[in-house]
Figure 1: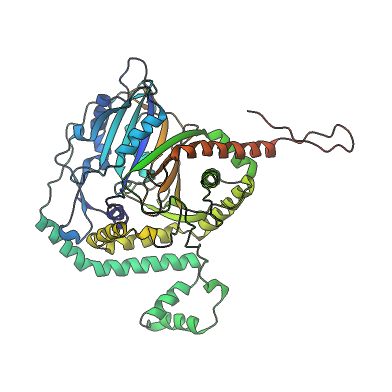
Figure 2: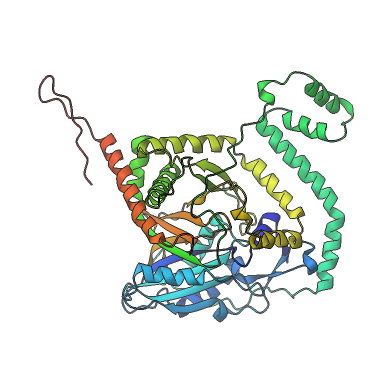
Length: 518
């Protein structure tokens, strides 16, 4: 029995009748002729053979009465594989649009909180039956993007000849605690809470002070509270009374408002999904040509897509759009409690007011570099822990009130869109001999941010998954075409930049550039 952390609980509290906390992935498999790889029965057998290593699949929620404290995970004593792994099919001919419509309807339904928070759909009939798709739908409260990649490594094999072992005979399960047991735990937690709050405050203060390299933050905290005694208090008071140096200034914060677009409004319960693939090597060409990071290229491709889409709808703001970019705060090599959320985020302007694609790329690269300079994973992780002190009952009621009053339509918005880039395996994976061809992310949206663009790299491909509110973005598939236009534009510029200049045929003739073909 394990209690959820503050960030994990937030993904539960965010849910309302129109906002869901689950995320999904759409995997496309190519089975061998006559084999059952990636099929319904072999998938259930694979999960049961590895269930001891798939903790998020085993555990279910138990909530504290009246929402007085964060809920707990227990190993479900009533686990039922047939409930979680389900069969589906697309009608002939099984086009990408038909598959996306199936996905859209499945992700528009919340998960049942009385069972482990996941469902897996085996979808047949894709592209005339050549492929089998699997939609893995799981609540964000139980994993983040990095943990999802770890789970994929457990579920799939690196060799096509691998077969699942026999199902695990038994695994530890928990008794469902009574309401009185949970209330007793909550009473003990309340007694310890002031001490935890002090420890967290000290840890967060140290992290932020170390980040700024000065006593500025500690001085502000001391000025707002009662004076500290002793030498430390005197030092802080002397610093406050004296002149502030440049080192004492707080780092400049990013702009906290974004322009309105058609997809920045209160969302409905219904979703749209669209997906596509771009060769990873083409993105690498752009990165090498312009000396930027791989993530900068992804951001620029999404920015070009959004600019084109808004221009086509006569809705491009004069101000540049602002994106929220999720960032993992999981330390490298961290294997402690991997199945929990260790994620924060930063904001970045997308330079959608810039017509030139190369200039837009460089502006985004500069903005991302500045945002990363301001971002401190240690401070972000420390500040995340403060979320455990908000009673779930209060936080959940607040989210439902925001949705009911359509607050997103009445106040300013901090960001326009979420853009996420998740690195995945660079080698092929298999399910009982069926090769995984693509791994499309299917993320979530919320009130005020009715569009999410996520990309997952896998074995030489960039697999894009776009999720939007069904009413706010009725033509989501048009963004797929615009993404490929943006890619062609940037890749053409990269080819021109990398092409060697031909020597002048004769004196006075200006050299020309030869375009490198692929």
